[in-house]
Length: 76
Image 1 (cartoon, one colour):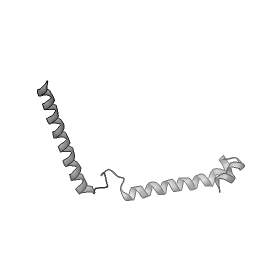
Image 2: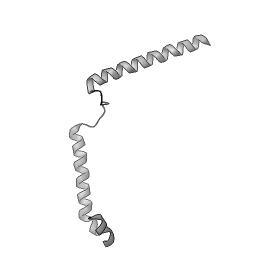
Image 3: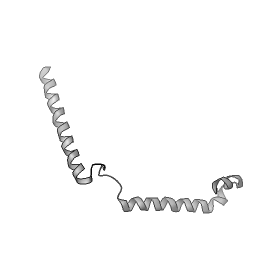
Image 4: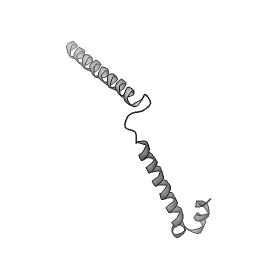
């Protein structure tokens, strides 16, 4: 039993060292505060622009969908 525990401890230590090494490498590549899987800047702006356009379209046609009392609240 003792040998199995020692083997597992070594395995865990090796995995943690490998993970730490990879983390340091990614920190150097992407920067310490980034994960490396962020949305590229240009795509992030496109998503924001698309949401703003959708919001404007909904406001433009809201008079056909919403009752008048809701319209006053929506357009405040």
